[in-house]
Length: 346
Image 1 (cartoon, rainbow, N blue to C red):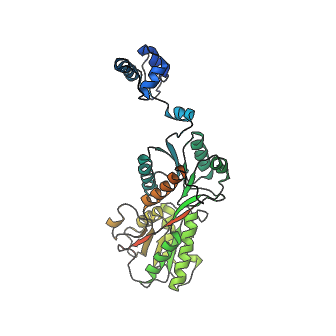
Image 2: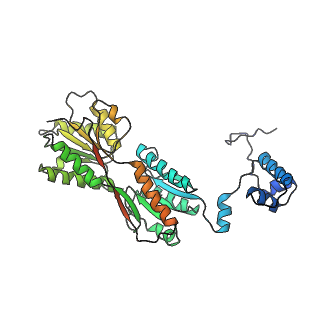
Image 3: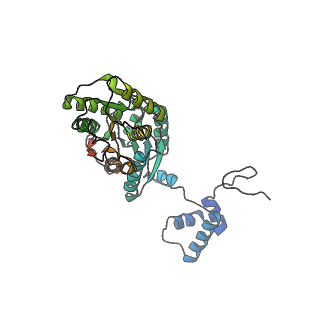
């Protein structure tokens, strides 16, 4: 006898999914009767309905909701969400908020990570469109989004969040990147710091570039001047952050304070500075879990990931409900949370 395995292990044979025909045959009824039962329609004798339900349980039959809805020309009951990295706690908060709004609207969310790869972003977006999602939410990895124009013209609403699209006009939800970083610099300057460094992500990423602009604006506001030697941009891992901090602190005119451009860079910086006798003041963009329990607790520019996800989802569902107004650009506020690491005088 062949052993069946749900995960397709060696020695297992693949079992075909049960169909409506199979249910009808086992229950001894017509396909129309099975259809009425699974769609909870009237006109089926209770005893017959019980036979059909028993056959459904025995065969493990599941309705193909997407195919049914497409035949009717209605919603597939899904929306697509393309993120940079679903494993990043920030994007986990975004995902949860989108799921909550979608659940209230009777829809499910299909999610994928682009890993900051424009080709992967395009692949995921078009795959979701091929599955006939009702709408798309995208954290863009690249600047080319013309591939979405046919889908948008066909009626699929698209909302970009955290970053704008590169070459299409669409609804966009952002946070105040410039204002937040400028506030971080002026906050550090208020404690006497004049040599304030900035560690940011790759400058071709919208948020990284905007936060660099905010850093420059903060330097201007504080009257401390902008120095290229105090800026380190690029994809950062723990080792590169450690080396960057060493270089900034060992310079002839060392940095006495640092602004980090996102939560991952901040975490790498905290690890690199652990146990150091001389630590620069630190303000990080993005809050992160346990930041308030470290020693010292980390001062951050905080913004609500769930608010970002909710605002984007609300825009998407407004479009699905028939809102035909011009594309909107929503910028959500940020706030400085002073905890100790950024309140260190020179």
